Length: 220
Image (cartoon, rainbow, N blue to C red; front, side):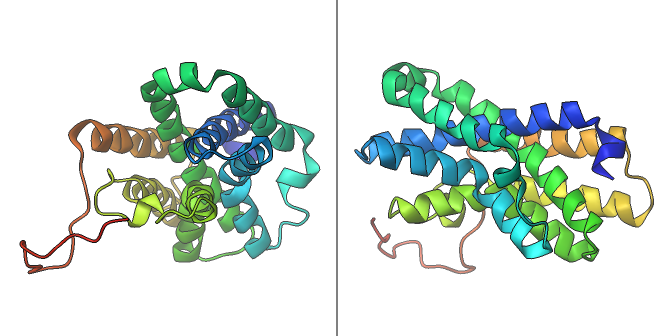
């Protein structure tokens, strides 16, 4: 199905672009945490490939693509080296990095959902794995860096919700036999734009209903 939506070369190029941007975010967090060069490389690899690895292991697509395509493994190392030597400059273009990260989020939630469905999962399970593909690497990054995962924190702009919307659009299109290059592209763009709007307007998910406003916030 993926080959019907995008040519293999286009799909590969988009994957590498998304992997590179996710790796940048992981490497930047490692620098902020004062990790050494090995820690920077590990966090870059985990952030970039973690979601895809999780998806491939669950659906039985083994060995995972990250271990069969050298480009998938080397691209995060290149991003880690870039951050290692030029992290002040990379920090200064953090807004651009976040924009590309949003694009990667949109792309991976769509391709992850589609690949899971190709391997025989139901629509709901496929959407869940599409979400995991998009955000799984970030969760593993935060856990390794000893932080509460960003998508679980109320004080962070919406991240998982745009991916859920993108994955939801894909499964609806599959359900009604309407998945094609146009509709899959629309799903990517929808998730991408929602994430950009969330960053711009600081949209956040609601907390517990009727929560006492004067309750003391838990600090990290």
